[in-house]
Image (cartoon, rainbow, N blue to C red):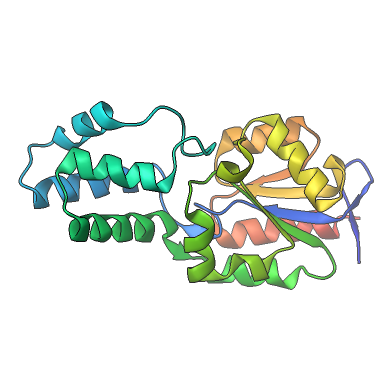
Length: 216
């Protein structure tokens, strides 16, 4: 089974983002909520944790792999004065918030596409994400290829991570449908020739992707 993109080229692959798409999670809100909760627990004034993070934050970015999970934990310990047990608790809460809740309907839709289409995940991520998301949701069994930004040293909307995804999936740009909740990532994909859906609602996304796949 194949469908055709707007250029008439057969569509061969569907690629999903994780946070905000396959997982219901507000990537903008949860870090601040986590910080505020731990400031209250430790009896700290609002803003104290952020100041501590700024003072102890290692250089580099988590999403491109320069900052490891161990370094992030050490930063939390220093900023909040945590012992090992509390550090374990905070990291556990962080990963719960990071992974959010599985969008079961969208997961099932992704699963239904194989083997008619190749499927992939393209996610801006941090060290530890593969372990935590696999443990919770089994994404490695859901799709053919997972590209985590922290593992490849590139992050959306950098064009190079889209090109890497094409290589990993063995398809051309015009043969891909992409789903992401961040407008800049969707726009970057479209500039490179991908068909892309800006995810806002599960039912709408499934309908739009299905229409794209059935268009020709």
